[in-house]
Image (cartoon, rainbow, N blue to C red; front, side, top):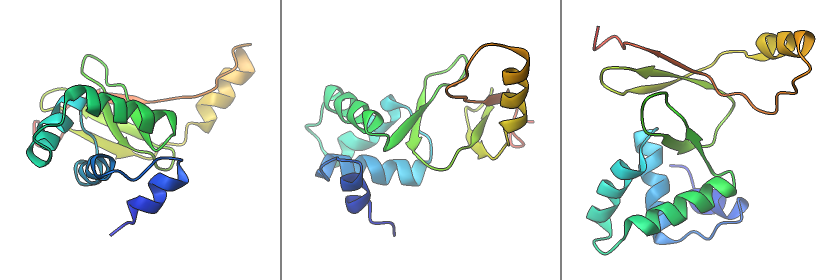
Length: 133
């Protein structure tokens, strides 16, 4: 198993029991909303508040340990930061899948045809997964 204690410390985060639990849940789930994360966390830490979850998520975001995935017409989900990738989102069941797409050609075209300087890019493709078809 991955040693998330050291990885949290590399991101200037203390490895608290709550952060380790959040990390474990993100590792298992892949992508999760804050509300769903809270439902799992309250089973492990009965006195934990939603505010504590938000505080930890925001701190983990600020330190680039996790990232937010903004899904059109749905609540954002969170995942452990990893190599650059895009997402497929099922419009029926809400499943989120990682996909590797080379966005360099698109970004090069934008640079050629516009004066707009792109600092970041996130791609979420919406559709219907195999199970829901």
